[in-house]
Image 1 (tube, rainbow, N blue to C red):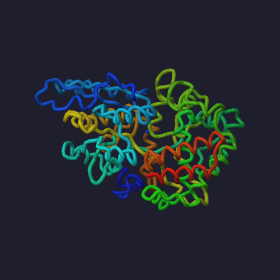
Image 2: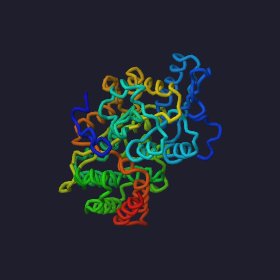
Image 3: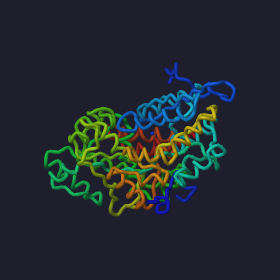
Image 4: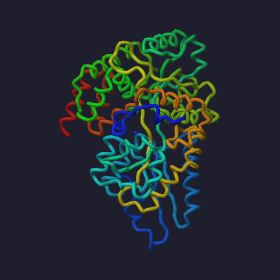
Amino acid sequence: MNTRSTMRVFAGLAAAGLAAGALAGCAGGGDNGDSGDSGDVTITWWHNATSGPLPAVWEEVAAQFEEDHPGVKVEQTGYQNEELQRTLIPNALAAGDPPDLFQVWPGGELRDQVANGYLQPLDDQIADTITSVGATVNPWQVDGKTYGIPFTFGIEGFWYNTDLFEQAGAEVPTTFDELVDTVGKLKDAGITPIAVGAGDNWPAAHWWYQFALKSCSPETLAAAETEFDFTDDCWVEAGTQLQEFLGIEPFQDGFLGTPAQQGAGSSAGMVANGQAAMELMGHWNAGTIGGLTPDQKVPAFLGWFPVPGIDGAAGDPTAALGGGDGFGCSADAPPECAELLAYIMSPEVQKKFAASGSGIPTVAEAQSSLEDPNLKMVAEGLSEASFVQLWLDTAFGTTVGNAMNEGIVNLFAGTGTPEDIVKKMQDAAATL
């Protein structure tokens, strides 16, 4: 399947038409410098794989790269996504002691890192690797130069327990009104309809993102990213719709303190262990859920469906919210960093990544290695989406994104209003 020929990716993909101070002891890229005459080289690599099958894949990649490159040692470490993106990487970059290879998020965050000189362009070093992922690389480019390469790209949707749906007599919804009806049927059957890890903030924020995606036209979404124009009524309407949805109590008790993906008590863990029927989450969630079951396997009951549209709203009902995970090299990383990235993006490794069930690979040659039926459904949903909007906090950048997320979490907690969210976004944009 070639998803790039069947979709238009907006936001960060528009150019193609289209997720510490206490870091002592972590060797940074600047210390590895010139490897030509200095003997052994150590590459530090930070990623967000902490559960499921992906940590084992990255361990194997590091070991094989070391075997193929005598004198090179790869120190790879997995961190929880929120900690990595919001604390560890920004602090390491600001301190001038970043890892060599690390998770790079596209959109506004990437633009800020490039402006500060934190990343090295990769085009002259691994041009063929960049070409291999086609248009999905565009959100990791600034002014025609490539500063990161996505190893996975997918869209968000509902991961659900088919057994619990059958028990409640519920069917997969195709409209938002039908989703509300499904919530009602699950509650009538004594089943928690939806788990959300609002304790980590961003999973709660994604609910508002979806209402905005389905309520705002593609043109309005594009103007918001390029011009920070949030004057359209659809932005407030998204908050009003979320507020009304919260009113039907679709989530588990104590959702404001529930983590998203760490442990059996997380929102992913609740789905994994049959304590909730659904979770709104990204394409990686099958592997996460599998890592939280007693047998460490993706459960047979797991299914997936796209977020349904809202009848009568200005947004495209088949639009999808998505993004990917990519890696980039710090500005002072040794040449071996780009070589490691090229190996990670090789068909060989991309096929292993696909077969592990951890996500949808970006190298087209590797997509045939997808074995998990749920990931195949996500890949099909991606190909059928009219366009894909990059995660809104990623698209808008850290300043506006953080303000937006804060407003959304306040709405979830009952301490904010739909208007507050938009005002926080506008006020943050005014500081740029």
